Length: 290
Image (cartoon, rainbow, N blue to C red; front, side, top):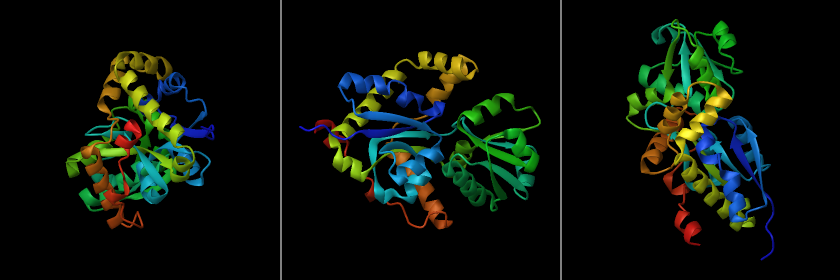
């Protein structure tokens, strides 16, 4: 069989994807999958690259997937999700939420999923949403201009370590859970349909390597926690709890929560179309059993 073209894979440059990606390239090499290149970026960068076709496979923000779901296929059983707290999508408030709802909240430019989650929860649960202003993820600068600040990923984690007692810190996934009773999926793993048609064996290899990387990494969460503490700071206990709190599959519970998120976004006019479950074919058995 002729060699397939190179496939580029986007990796979110946050610690929350480490359990899926930490041993990915090792697993690719062992499987003999050589024509794969990994590109790192924040969610907004990877979302744009996938939509433009400059990368073929990527972890993609859930909202970005909902905007262009008919251009992608999902890699089965992979996500970044939470059922309750997520620990890295955090709302920092310098005054009570009831007052902040009448004011202004600065929001990260890194991803639309969490910003729209905040918008949905505040409007749906409290009946109003404050003015949201987009800013670079700098907590001090954000709070100079607003009553609160929404941060995601590693910047949110670092800010939570340094937040003084004068700040209230709310976990956006917990707010969603308390309101809906459902979990929240923040990112999915998608492949452009033309890449699947042009390089099916390589895509199959990428999917299997991601699953195997996840299996190996989660079998040694302590080792991953030590690595994260060395790179980012913080205690190993913190990182072990963080990695164990997140969910990395995409089963019925994750699907239900995400569908509800999409329905809320559609009803609020944040999405132009409904994202229907029928648009998510599960090719897992076909890919694995080939």
